[in-house]
Length: 89
Image 1 (cartoon, helix red, strand yellow):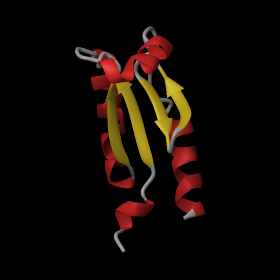
Image 2: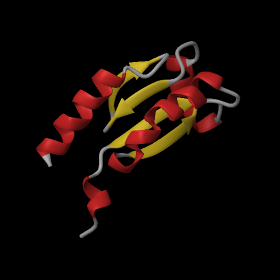
Image 3: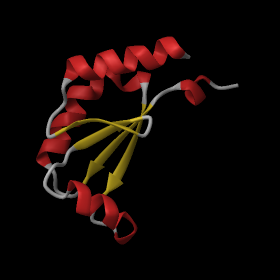
């Protein structure tokens, strides 16, 4: 039973290049042990639905599959939601 199974998954909807996404990842760096980062490149053909939805909004973050924030990291909101998920586990 690994602890990573209970770690929340933070999904980053991104594309290359994305300076805002790079900035967002730097802001999240101190928290990286507390979640699993999953990046979704919206320019890939299999992600066209996300591209249609988020083309003008990246970076967009989902936490455990639920929309969390876009454009930039709202660290307070992120911490609150992360804490809720950690307490729930």
